[in-house]
Amino acid sequence: MKSSSLHFLGTALIVLLITAFFAGCVAPIPSAVPPSNQDAKLLSIGTESGKALGPAILKVSEDASGKDIASLGDDSARLSSLAGEYYFQMRDLNVSPKYQAWKTNYLLGLLDLQTAGDYFSKSAAAAQSDDYTTALTYLEQGNTLFQRSNHYLNMANESIRQ
Image (tube, rainbow, N blue to C red; front, top):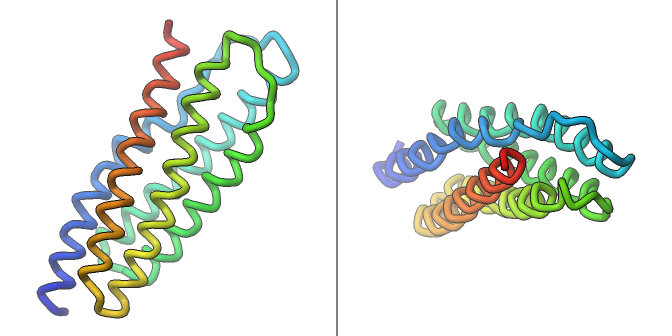
């Protein structure tokens, strides 16, 4: 393995260490009895998304730890797809004011997670082509969005604790 690829993978590992923190932020959702059907649907989708996204994030992390660039590309694309699916399931729900801040921040987090997954997948494809400069650029862009996603998901969780 070339030293450039080691640098790329080292950076990928640093980026994906954040996933351990992020994975814990996806699952928590409000536990109060929802006052409307739309609220109940939001909470149901939120629970489902946490159960699906947490393992998907961990799989991406395992791929990076195992230096499996091909799987990293595939699993990052899957993570992006999942985040997009949950975004579109939640987007048009009309929820009560009690859950509006949670919904808004969670959706912003899902959008950033979706785009971060796209960038991680592109980074892996570039690395497979030995284009480590492009791979690193995509990785850094994905990391920025991943961190912002984490911020929005934390804000969503904080909005419920108030």
